[in-house]
Length: 493
Ligand code: FAD
Ligand code: SF4
Ligand code: SF4
Image 1 (cartoon, rainbow, N blue to C red):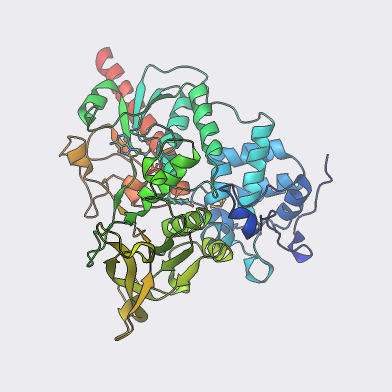
Image 2 (cartoon, rainbow, N blue to C red; image 1 turned 120 degrees about the vertical axis):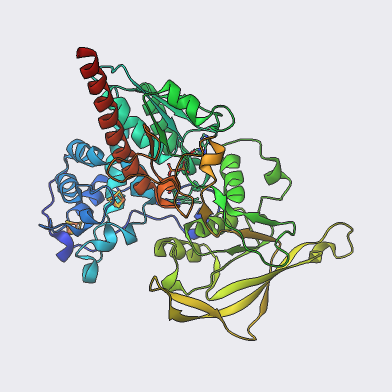
């Protein structure tokens, strides 16, 4: 057993991330870029924590994970206990450890961040949980006793799965419906392998199935059943369907071939990696190989697109973003990785039009024009808007053309028209189209129908989806138990 490390190590021990593969090695495949800590390094890095009385890291973790305790247990080499603490508040600690934007959440708020660099909380969380998997400490959610009640969950993303696990542990028969052919939602078809290898998600899906959660895949609510059908079958229903309607720009030339949406591009790449047949990848329309690629947008989805394109051996990859680096919504770490991998950033640059023509290689060829460039305006940051963010404005006479054979639009997502799709016009929505819930009960405007994750918050994060799924599970349990109690009381009268 390793020697226990003394805490407060930040004074003498520098921050060290797990070993990172070189950019050249990363470009040769889609594997994750960080190795795992070994036990010595994990203990040493965990021991840097100063065990704050008021731990800001925990306050800024959406799950309020008990970070100081599992860091101390890791420093002492008590890994099974560290795992028990970590999993008590988080259904997917190894996933959050990999893909949370820690620089904006726990680590960004670590008190030693200023001057000493934060404790590497995410990497330790990943280490603890991967070790737990290796040692068989991660157990299926098998309940102590079965309850005579069933729950229907629409959507097998992190919100739906977290709720499924919590409710199964309580003894409900849990049925998860998803229109995809695999479990995991955006963790499988959106987020690329180099951030989250798909086997990490698949083993969680198998664990829930081993605990008795029943999946109904290739099952689309609105096509294969209505919401009313599921309400009739289950004691309570959770809608956790995420947001998938891609935002678009109304610019000249936007309909040209070779201008695609981010999710089409990323899904094709993820499916290819999973070994599926993807004709649009094979025919080149959703494949960046040998192309000059321009990605429009500055969020995490845009970062995933640029980093996927460089791995597909694009000739060049440029990201156009209308604000500057400091105001970019994407994680600063992701930008740094993208730059290391050879992505060029045009800050303060906004598309004005997409230019069609024949690509240089086939100038005399017949056939429809395709996109060959993005006409772009230089921007500057003007007066702050009502949210406090400086609004970008055009610099007159600053146009330039950015060459492109493939343009990927990564401009964000809105909800689909859920009430219409589900045949439930009485389902109330907000002015943004997300589902309206009562935040005390997590219930929508329909009795016994709850909602969680991106479909309530708008496009957000996995860790928030887990939080919502857990809160919804508690609320659904209270609701079903209260209904059962009132039925019992009525029968007794
Ligand atoms: P989803 O994960 O979208 O799952 C919803 C599920 O519902 C899907 O499986 C879908 O098939 C299913 N569904 C939808 N409609 C129906 C229907 N009618 N019938 C049946 N099933 C249906 N977050 C991070 O924390 N870190 C990251 O690095 C990160 N990177 C991202 C990269 C990309 C490209 C994208 C798009 C998002 C990223 N996110 C990231 C955000 C994160 O993936 C989401 O916030 C999270 O997955 C939302 O979880 P959810 O369960 O609400 O929805
Ligand atoms: Fe940090 Fe995310 Fe883990 Fe919370 S869940 S401790 S925010 S990495
Ligand atoms: Fe440890 Fe930093 Fe959290 Fe303080 S804020 S408890 S130093 S990880």
